[in-house]
Length: 410
Ligand SMILES: [Fe+2]
Image 1 (spheres, helix red, strand yellow):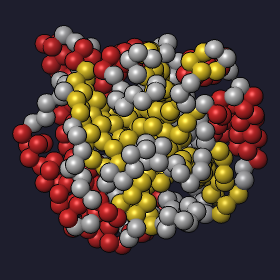
Image 2: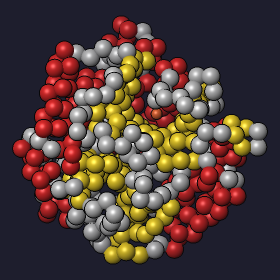
Image 3: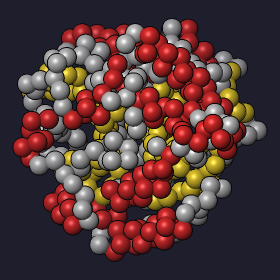
Image 4: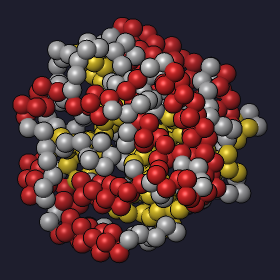
């Protein structure tokens, strides 16, 4: 493996410190075999408020290709497993059974004004498939990565066959590792497997609607995961993720008008994002306390101050082509809008620019936004600066409304 072979994209200039340690970290990771042993994102974990799983899984069943597979019942959680197939990562939707349950993941929400209103709602992180779990964990511990111990994993009611890194100080997300021969199915060592009838009913209804509208053939697996972080943590969050994963640094774009940058990392093993989604970090160019001097909007830093550093959106691909005379993404958005889901703006971009994109409103169950992205023909860019600027701005407007709501009800 050579994690340094990739062409750099983007126009955002990094510090000399970043440019010094980027090649050092990747060379070391390749040399000791970590890049080789850490493969794709195999599962993602999301927690929701008690009682929200039925509605959230129905929402995902309509808006994404995910299927409800099974629920793992443990003492204080239900963990619902959603799957497309073995070529794309699973989603674990974790629901606290008792609203008074307190724990580390809840604490990460509680000091932020909007985050605190839904203390159990957050994206937790990704689990990587590795070829030698013991060796990966030992190598990472030697690089000062901290893990939950077995007793903590048991108390947190996370699958016992995963090794899980403590939340990042920069993103507040976790990363986990588990070993699975590539031909084996994913098996979660947790609780008792049951089918929840109410979850299943909502899932089946949503899937029926999805198929009737023809959306099942148009909405593709996850393309990227976008995390928002504080301005000063941009470079360390990128390098930390490269330390934890086998991803490489694709590049960074300056979104100057929104006082923001978009920073992209991708899998060194799989060029197809559907197999292992790209990981994107968005950070303001300036910290909030100089906004009055800079005079620009600052939607990214505002988001982080309101919710804490966390995942902002999950982006799904839309198949290239047209349906009933409409470009697919326009067709998909119209169909989903008619089912009562809101979007933050109209579909932006064009065939000429290479891609079209849109953000949904944040889910009331998980606080996560769904992005749809359709790339045309052989467009090989990941995004356009103009689109990112418009999406960032739209999310910021929504954001301010939510802050007002949150403050008026507290
Ligand atoms: Fe995105």
